[in-house]
Image (cartoon, rainbow, N blue to C red; front, side, top):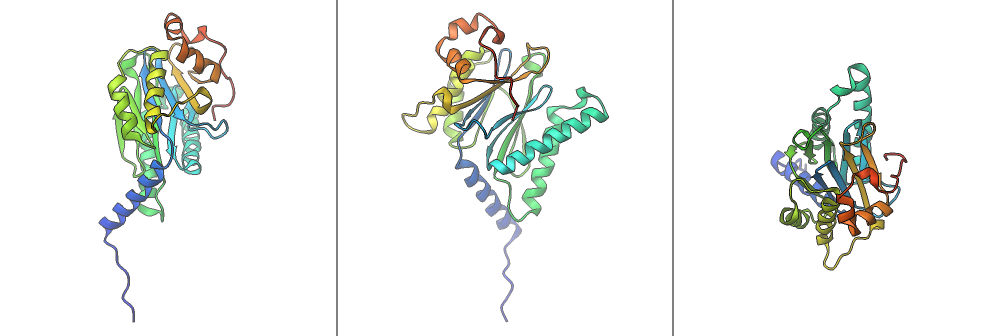
Amino acid sequence: MSMPFYVPAEQQMKDRADYARKGIARGRSVVVLQYDDGILFVADNPSRALHKISEIYDRIAFAAVGKYNEFEALRLQGVRYADVNGYMYDRSDVTARGLANAYAQALGNIFTDSSKPFEVELVVAEVGSSVDEDQIYRLTFDGSVADEHGYVAMGGAADAVATALKERYREGESLSEALQVAVHALQQQDADRVLESSKLEVAVLDRTRERRLFRRLPASRIDALLSQPAAVEAGSVDDLPPLDEGSAG
């Protein structure tokens, strides 16, 4: 009669964490940065159909790395959470903090109880009326939450990207400056890597707008921001060519 196979709980949790980290590291990085007029999201993502960055609600956006079908399921849950709470109570009651707490509970339950942890890492961000009121929360596969300030790098070669952000990021940067810092950091994932606008997914939460604050930036705007920073700094986001008004993804 064979003895039952026993694995200590600590070893199970370690194995699950290692599995999730390896899955997340296989992808390409995403960075989130504060700039003077809002929050910038930049993903190393050549796909025009599979978004890593999405709108959740009025002032809230979502960025993710890892397994697409898993973080897409979480995005949809977040949209439903925001819609239901905004309808039952008030739109102002829907906050990034509340959404981050909901995601933390869901991810924690999956990590502990499911046969396989989610291979995802998330950022939930809410733009405030000033830089000091911005909220950026980073969530890991086990439901841990960190309140971030300035910038976040996740997925892929996140350590190398974060090091580059630390060296170049400055508070109060313009959109063009922040985008250049983000692209430089993402290029540190590989030696001699050059990221063209067609390889980037870029979006902003722009506090200067009155209605929808989330906007995707098309390739033409990305190129303008990267190549003509002086001209961009003198004006607002609305001085550039029209934004892509399509689905938030």
